[in-house]
Length: 359
Image (cartoon, helix red, strand yellow):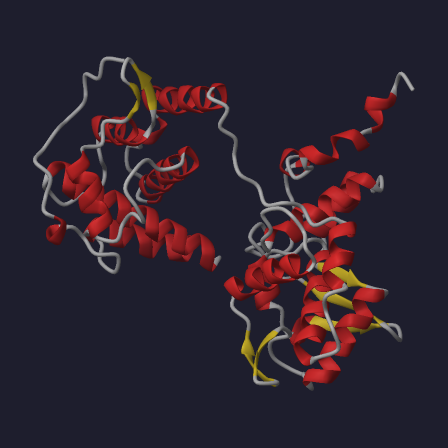
């Protein structure tokens, strides 16, 4: 593909690049607006990371500070620098090795080499959002940019590249993980966390870490209702057709009651760190992921497990048991049917009743 808009500049030295805790002035303004726009901490961090990378890449590529708006040529150069394409010599990009090394040295990249296409796409989306917030002409929505990204996705699929997904924790895997939880304080906590994360609708790790006693109430003698006022898709109150109330019943309610009693928790964060058999402050989202990974390993499960495995596993298990889609979406807070369907793991395809029409 002939690139009419490619612009090349002598890369800046690594020491001149923006460090991770620094931003170009205009990018910093964009981050502040994004902080107000996106309340989710994980989203805020990913947006800030993307804009730091844009600022560092621009400075290394053009030897100048990035300001908004950027031009169409800049976005196209970013794409050809980061999107792998097939040439006569193999798979290549246009990112100069010295620029790549400078980005790594500045802490803006973890290692030398190409980025995942999903990462490139996300960073273009963040730049697009920054332009929209400032009501600037948006180069990311121009036909040339959209076409390049579309063709890049098609090419990656033809090469056999697939988006990585965490292995789903369905009921079989969950039972195996629960069996590893003993009656120690840690075991009681982990049992309650796994049950809460799965049974309340496949909660995200940030939602589990943020769970608080003020949002939990008893329902009857043994059950609970957890009021999820804030989530990734529910950041400004309850939307029509959904409810923030998530039931926690049966074994899950028993596990939660045992943890609250053992940890003597009556207010504040529900799931907390444990220091030498003492209950500490609230778990961090990353700690939730570590607990899931550890329990999966102790259970001898094979796969790439993480906190999101509870969410995808909940939807997958609901599909296997024939739970109506509206009921599933009411628990998960999904707004898009396509998003929910996307959680069904390929390994569960044989359970689709439509595959048994000749039986």
